[in-house]
Structures are given as structure tokens and as C-alpha cells.
Length: 186
Image (cartoon, rainbow, N blue to C red; front, top):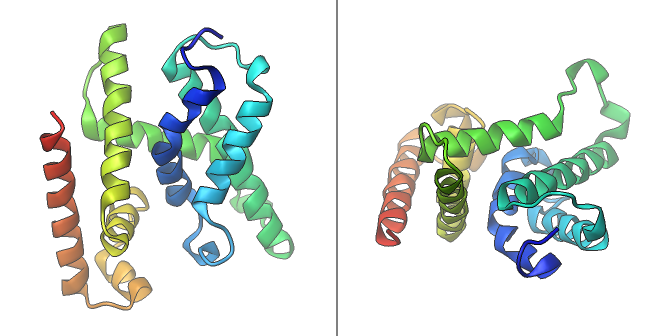
């Protein structure tokens, strides 16, 4: 692997991986498992297995990190739900992470075919993750649940203990701040 920086370059993916971890971590496990702990474990495993990475681009590194994160999410979910595990309802966490990554990419870019366009798209994904991380927690949670988990405003209001109008305000302000942060950096 000849990416500049070696395993030290992993830190660049922290907010992106934390976003993916939050998107796929069951909200009911919020008090038991922290997304940043899962990302830290992912970085530790990536650092230890750096010599096994065979990719040569940031996109391949990102995919490799998502695979490790998917494994860590699966282990966390298994550890907290052993007695309640229903094999019929299982879904591949790796596929779900790839879907989320695709969902994020669809927000940012339409048809990217050249390597430079893919690199620019990857950069935009990292910027979106940073912008989401900078939102106040309740706005970030409302945006995450509504746009990535497809929760209704009513469901979010029940979960957050707020009125539907308050959740609507959180979503509106969250999207405005995201747009502002993303256009300010252009």
C-alpha cells in the first residue's frame, strides 16, 4: 500500500466512520455502545492489519475501513442482543454501510466517472461527515433518523420527546446549517 501517511492517515476518516456508525447503531443501544468507541476499535484493527491492506486508493481504503466497522457493529449488536437474536431478521451490516455510503454519495454527486471526479466525491463525503458532526446533537440526531433511517417526524418526536413541530424545526435548521457549512468550504 503506497498511500501517503501509512496507517497514520486513517484519522482523516474518523468523522465519516463515526457518522456511518451512528447511522447503523440501533438507537436503543445508545447508552450501551458509543459510535466513537466502535471507530476507535476499527482504527486499532486497521492499524494492526495495515500490512494486509492491498488497495491503492482512498476509495479502497474507505471500503476496507467500512468492512472493519461493519464487523465491529455486528459484534456490538450481537453482544447486546444474544438472547433476542432473530436470524430471519438479520441483514448484512456491511451491505447496510455500503448502502449508507451510497446514500451519502447520492446526496452529493450524480454521475462521477473519472478518477478525479471520484476523488472529489470522496472529499465531499468527508466534508459532509465533518459538517454533520458539527451540528448540535439534537439536530444531527433528527437529520440522521429522518434522512438515513427513514423515520417519520412523528416517530422522531416520540423518540426525542419533542413535538412534531419542534422536530420539523430541528430538521429545517439542521439542513440549513449543513448547506451553509458545505457552501462555506467551497
